[in-house]
Length: 333
Ligand code: ADP
Ligand code: MG
Image (tube, rainbow, N blue to C red):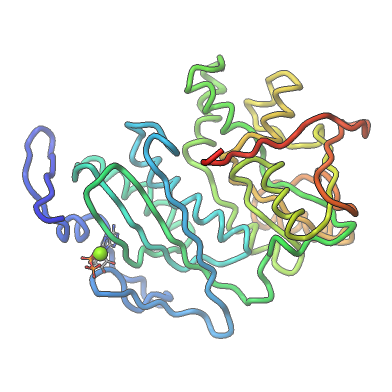
């Protein structure tokens, strides 16, 4: 893409693809970091700490599907990276860097500046450097690949849940879904509640520190992006075990806590866009789990346990089985 139109206020100038990359997405490599060579050559060169393995994950955000048209670019920059860092967190990996493939309908200077602010704000908070990418004209589409590292045997894999493990969830669940439905006009929500709930939807905080602190303590982990029931379901399938969850023990978000009980259960179990960690650990690790959470500055809640068999049973606080099924988000269903 050459000669991209650039709008500065109402004045249209042209900026080519390379000027755009140089202005918004090129920063000097951090001294002493793992990045040997960043943006500007045919490939980036990234060092992996001795004895460790690369952890790699990609997530794409498409306008109209993952975010509303006209969304705040700063929040988009944050969220596009946050959902990727969340995958590194769920593996227990240390972020190293990320690449950014961007399709833009136009090179709007205000949009690019806001997007870069949100992106680098979160990147800097986690020591992740932008190592390269691709830029093209097209319908707005943001695709990030993150690179992290970890000792291979420390990975918190989905297939590692053990019989008798306790199931934990970080932070709170359900507010992102509540905010989404309020913004879509499907539900009324007081402004004072909509604000914090919208922050959960638009600016999720990936639990990177917790994932690192859980190495050697947790068995299996996953990040909750499509709803707890569906995502925990992946751990159960991969580990060939079942689980029972107490719906009344789930940590509801601040806004969701003010809603009626049925909605609290539904959105905590099947909300989506939470970006919390769900993980399992042996019961004798409960104190270590709490200490790891405290060190990472995140609260964790014990919500159930791994049992023999398959599938997920949901009970109320009295242990009575509830007829709730998973309807995890699926783009093709
Ligand atoms: P190539 O033609 O070899 O794919 P490009 O012209 O696409 O190279 O990109 C030039 C350089 O700019 C490369 O180092 C590439 O990684 C980097 N780059 C392109 N787009 C982005 C972006 N959106 N963010 C960061 N780096 C980018
Ligand atoms: Mg390219």
